[in-house]
Length: 246
Image (tube, rainbow, N blue to C red; front, side, top):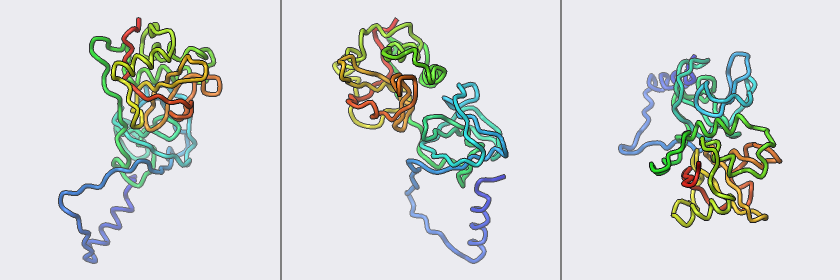
């Protein structure tokens, strides 16, 4: 079954009646910032995962026939589903990912922007885990209250370290800022560290899922997903560089 079957029929009819669609040379249509889709699994709930592949953590499901919102799309594991075989994965508005092979969008191709990933940390301190691995680690602890008041340790462990080497997230954010790593404009890309001030002076840090979402501690008292400005006193984002980590 083709997602764009009806589009093909319409185009064929248009060609028969001699309709000409003009295309301006040198121009290209930009992908959308978001788009609607519909889950089609022919019955079973669709698994939402922490990253673009079936090996990533399963943390919730979406019912067959449910409407979803796609925020961006990225290449991942090849999956065969209702709409054929594809490597395209969709980041949903709740921060999880699903294979595009099960999402009706009206097109077999990409319809929203590429998911933007944060750049690499300096080679002098390479993290044991990459961005999707760190996010997967965090999602495995989704709903846990065991990391309250341990946001910096949570982030460091997500990236594969034993600890960050900093006493507080405020100190960590100050270091990123003073060394030119803190970006104060733009939506944090996937895998970035997002830094905050807070009322206690200890600061806060989270991991960006991209497109305005983060996974972190202290979301209603547990590990959860929130908007990147939901914590308040947002400072900015940086690459996942933890120079003092051990």
